[in-house]
Length: 289
Image (cartoon, rainbow, N blue to C red; front, side):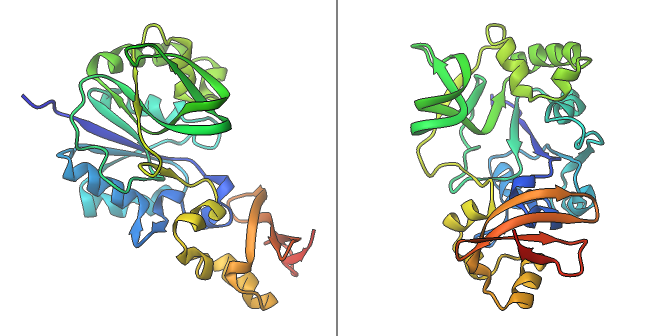
């Protein structure tokens, strides 16, 4: 008998490293190779027979509302997305945790990773050759994760989607409910709670090959995957800069956020090796750094 599975997609964060595109829309709503990231993931989940899909929104939540009518998904609002980390999203969907895929709205899977039915909880992982600053995994001979540490060398690291079976979900929910009163927990990741209780929460590693999972942390990284972003960044801000300065969009790179509010943005970028500052509050918005 097939296990009834559901999915939760985390989409509440600001993705500030993706300036300036993330100032204009959430990263999960960016188009990659002709498809909106989160729509592609919803489609893949549905193709795998998973129709119970919940999206946790926060930043620019109103931009996700169309997904309810288009795909029949549920939306849950995280009002604390600016104050706290992703534990503030998970705490709002504890009642949804059963046999559950926990996903990030900004992941891109060339092939459908949700099709295979799993019975044991797992965290997806890719292999980093050389040094990495990611959350790296140590496992035993049976493939169960025994330790997680930040940074490593020639190591498997956490990335992409996670699967909780019903037993794991029940145990984890009790632990998060208990610890959420702590400010440190609210400011941290749900993975930190898992790591603290790793012996109580058996979870396997699910090893993927390079190219199975993509995660883009900046426009520069996205451009390596989708070359169309060199000529067309889909950003009104970058188009305005290029119009003012006579540059082509592909000349701008190495973006770094400096300051962001609901109505203003300041970031730096490079053109031909020279760093510039963009400040939306100034009359002359672009100047050399």
